[in-house]
Length: 232
Figure 1 (cartoon, rainbow, N blue to C red):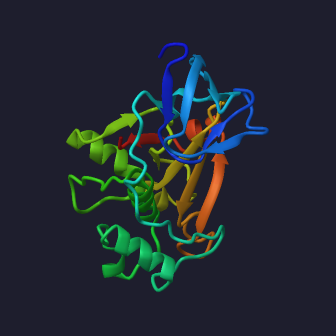
Figure 2: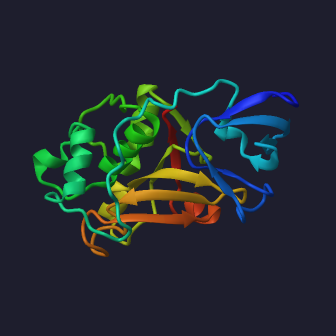
């Protein structure tokens, strides 16, 4: 990208930062916001006469279609459990067409269902599943890698699924199942902000609980041994 080139924000709620290293005083931008490049790779841009910073993976040379997602988000409340009978769980399963059979099996909200829902409502993408069983959160990356569907990354990227392949519990069975969350933001120091359901793991919380957290690089890399699925 060249100086003075027009570029566009690819998604909603992207930070327009006063400094590239901090989010202090950051303003949120809508998808389709027009910017003018000053320099990069952390792109220094102008917006409505103001200078600021935007991560390169949030901008595009092509103006996005901002009307592609019409399904409103479910009403998640931090720390609230979402049972099989809850309105939020029913709404999610209706949106993703119960592709993971949570309603059919009477499960409380699963991490896999939440992440599928987030991919659908944030990106407008229906996940193309090469298998119909064994789709536990910790093995998503291997399913898609083996099938040659979607890119598998070792470094986080916004709007990816984050697969926790280890270190989530003292229970070996729970660790084998793993966990999956949706990457909302990647900070300059490599920490990852995720949203997720059914966390903390079994035995530590009411089932189906909605959660948000920021995970330091050392933890997602060494404890959780995370892999990332890029659906875009």
